[in-house]
Length: 104
Image (spheres, rainbow, N blue to C red):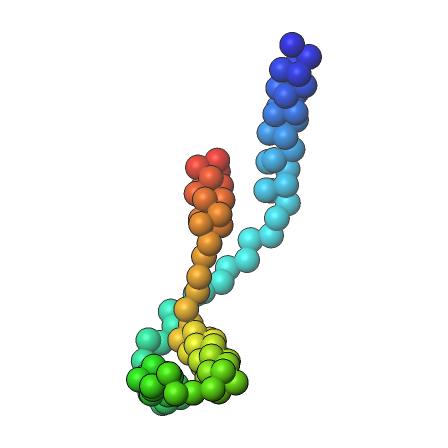
């Protein structure tokens, strides 16, 4: 019973302080621009190099050469993602956003 009263009191107090915080916040008007989907020449070069690496016969390479190719592939993938403007959102983040939208 005491736990229920404590939870209800906490709930009511949090709801009474919520409007004060939202009124105090400044409203900043921003405009969002969509990224340009056109591929740059740099991303085309990166894609060609990745295709070239994938088509290679790696069975005759030494382990150090394979390791270097893996490192190069990872760095090219990072550069391609950075240039392309790809954003990854985890499942936990999506769940949190949905819960916040439902609450507000």
